[in-house]
Image (spheres, rainbow, N blue to C red):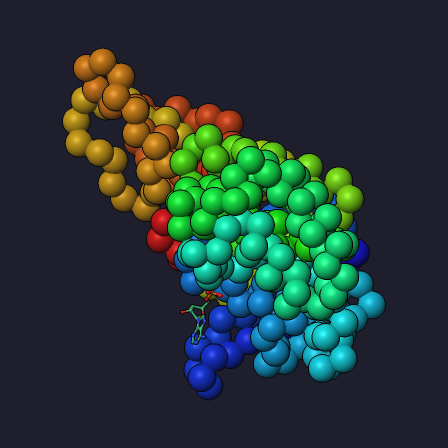
Length: 292
Ligand SMILES: Nc1ncnc2c1ncn2[C@@H]1O[C@H](COP(=O)(O)OP(=O)(O)O)[C@@H](O)[C@H]1O
Ligand SMILES: [Mg+2]
């Protein structure tokens, strides 16, 4: 299902502009929302999930208009949402928790509900620990139970807000792969502040910074933002300074190799190199004056 957003704004408490007249089209499939803390990712996701009202502009999910009460209600029925901070009941087991959320979501037929819970525990790889209390779960397992609860109503659209934050590398990869699998039958909107999460999963993305859309399009096109601005610099002296951002620093024997994004060649010894996605993201943030 396609999401269409036009001149959408959200202001908190009269003066905090979390979203500033954003225009965005999110086609079906898997789509990434990339941006630093405070960019407005959660605000946008909460609006799309029908939880938060926009201050101005329009947002449509499929045929539903999120400005209206009816639209927000209808969207909630076709959507699954994993919030950034999902509160779970620590003493419930994984199975009990899903069953409980199923009841809250109006799944009255106990046999069908139990079958669905069982099926989802299999999907997210938690069937073997179904009878363990959630307080014994690792961060990654909690995130997977979070996805399972979001999938109970078999949503056409799944919205997941920074699901990889705080996961160890193995769980991060496992979780990303799970999302890609789930995106086979439905649209998935994934937010993150980590370029790599998107690079591995989303063919298309939008980059958000300080409430504005800095880029939208194909993920592989993002690196174009840094074309002609990426340099490597070998030195045994101090770290490079000036109007540049150091993307990485590598210890190479006697000295250091810095990779920097800068509009101008930082010094005579600097070598221009091909940009990658992360460079593209850094270049976009520099354009907007956001320090990373
Ligand atoms: N409930 C709220 N009340 C006031 N300001 C908020 C609230 N939620 C978010 N903000 C502010 O809105 C901006 C965007 O926040 P958020 O949408 O959470 O960004 P992100 O998810 O990208 O970190 C930030 O400046 C944040 O402090
Ligand atoms: Mg957030």
